[in-house]
Length: 216
Image (cartoon, rainbow, N blue to C red; front, top):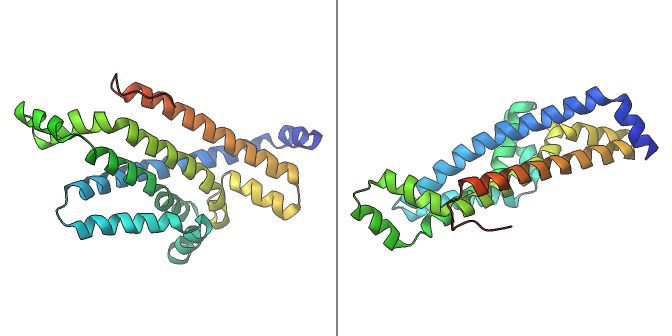
C-alpha cells in the first residue's frame, strides 16, 4: 500500500498523461465505432440481399472472436505502430455489440407500429428516427455500454503497438516487476470503465422514451 501511495505522489504527471491518452483512444475509437456500426446496421436491415447482411455480421463477429492481442497484431502487420493502428484495432474489436444490438433492436419493432406510421404519412426516414430508433433505444444503448466497456479494457493491450494509455504502465510494471504500478493502472482502468458506464446509463435513461425505461 505504501508503494502505491509513493508512486502516485511521485508520478502524478505520468499517471495523468496515461489517463489522458487512454481516454483519447477510447473517445476517438468509440466515435468511429458508433458511426460505422450504425451505418452497417442500417445496411443490414435495409438490404434485400441476405448474403450481404450475413457477410457483414460474420465478419464483425469473427473480429471479436479473435483475441484482442491477435487483432492488434494483425493491424500492426498492415499499418505499423502508433495511435492510428491502435484506434483501428479498437474500432474493429468494439463493433460487434453496436451492430448486433442496433440491428436486433431495429428489426424487432412491431410491424403494426410501422404501418401506423405509414398511415400518418411518415416517410421511411421519419419512421426510422421517430418510431424505430426511439423504441429500440434501450437495446441500442445496451450495445453501446457493452462496446464502451470492451473498448476501455482492450485499450490497455493497444499499448503493445504504441497506442499509449494505461497499458503503458501495466507493461512497464510487468517489465520492471513492479506490482504496485500494475495495480494502479488496473484500478484506474476499472474506475474509468465504471465512470463511463454510469454516464452512459444516465444518458440511456434520458434518451429512452417514457414507458420503455428499464432499471439495470
